[in-house]
Amino acid sequence: MSALHAPRQNHLLAALPAAEYEHLPPHLELVQMRLGDVLYEHGGELRYVYFPTSAIVSLHYVTKSGASAEIAGVGNEGMIGVAVFTGGETTPNLAVVQCAGYAYRLKSQLLMQEFNRAGGRRSGALQHLLLRYTQALMTQMSQTAICNRHHSLEQQLCRYLLQSLDRSASNELTMTQELIAGMLGVRREGVTEAAGKLQHAGSISYSRGHITVLDRSGLETQACECYQVVKTEFDRLLPRCD
Amino acid sequence: MSALHAPRQNHLLAALPAAEYEHLPPHLELVQMRLGDVLYEHGGELRYVYFPTSAIVSLHYVTKSGASAEIAGVGNEGMIGVAVFTGGETTPNLAVVQCAGYAYRLKSQLLMQEFNRAGGRRSGALQHLLLRYTQALMTQMSQTAICNRHHSLEQQLCRYLLQSLDRSASNELTMTQELIAGMLGVRREGVTEAAGKLQHAGSISYSRGHITVLDRSGLETQACECYQVVKTEFDRLLPRCD
DNA sequence: CACCGTCTGTGCGGTGCCGTACACAATTCC
DNA sequence: GGAATTGTGTACGGCACCGCACAGACGGTG
Image (cartoon, helix red, strand yellow):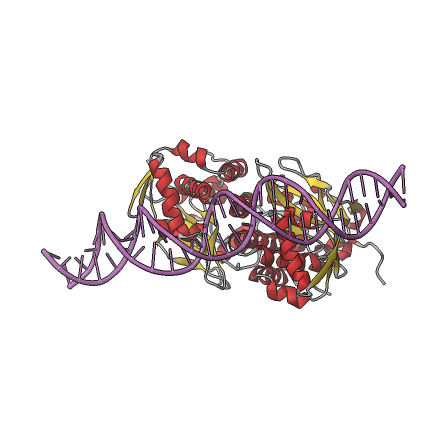
């Protein structure tokens, strides 16, 4: 029986072999994340890296004119702070909490040490894992670019809901249409319309910030290929070892 | 006086300290790249990684419906085949030559060996460098996503021309409007119109696949912030050591 | 309960780009 | 020198989404 909160609820931490994992827990700190919390912003240093268990974080960009859009999302399948081990220390983005929940955090410096220990006594599994995650993250970014270019608002909404669902424990999501619009970088009214269609079709049901997914496969049919491409790539690069 | 073709014309190879670079040349192979050559495609293995000197390569995605768009470009500032050391071996993308020219290639296996040698005798400068390049590439992808979402065709065209210019030796580019349209994922007619405006404004001049940039700063004014964001990030992560 | 802030629905004109179709100009090929 | 190929210009209807404005509807708070 698993504890209410456990680091291994994060897939990356769960994928580490015991030998590499065992000395991490003393340094892993459970933190609560509230909607809208900013983990880092453009130019700010990353003091910690975060491994979400139940929270969902959005990597975001805000243009000079104030428009914004999500570049990639991170839930319990990933981590926030890739720039720590790629060496740039920061990125021109913003990491903001999109669904409240929990995450474990680790001092950046500590992660760096572990990452660079590859080739030494240990197997380098951590490095290997994080690099693969980085590639998966790049796939997500690529697909966001494509999706923004070629797919309709409704298709994107479906993709977004599905991705959020995969990161969520239940079939209910807590997010307003306003918030989704901010993520997709579109008008709130556009989301209202697209969501209305989905509700009409019986795929979802929502009210005041609570979305219940009734027909997951319906969403998958409506979604663009981007969802599957990203999912397939994540599964390929980071197979779950349940 | 530099040779006509030299590996060090590629900024990444040039940035390697002598101790790490010196044993690479025997394995570096100069290859000619023609317009449209495909270096790898979705699912195909990456037998080589490429370090362009004069060629420009586009990381592309083609949707099921046949639409396509560039995710990121790679010129003499970078390399093709990041997935080799991130461990995924392949990506769901396509790498296609966008401007004919030359590149040096290296067997993927060899790069992997070098990459993983960090922590051993050598300093790990290669690993460090490639990770930083990976981050820069991610910035480019992110910005492509944002640009596709929020910026006009004309702004994107300016950005694209500027990025190509930075990778080019002269102020002339060899690319048709049709090709540019394919890169941006828009209609050819849209490019004609936007390019017409730029020509009218005196920023560029073109005819049948030959574009001459007359007023670079004019383009920079018209371009969206994405160009500068990416450029600044590249300079920060991979400073030129000329 | 009445109130207010938040969330959602709807309508309307505007616009940037699409899809299509076709004309013309500049090269290359015989 | 004529024909075929390739690159560019233009025009027109259509549509998805935008920006704005406002109305209703729900839910928590005093």
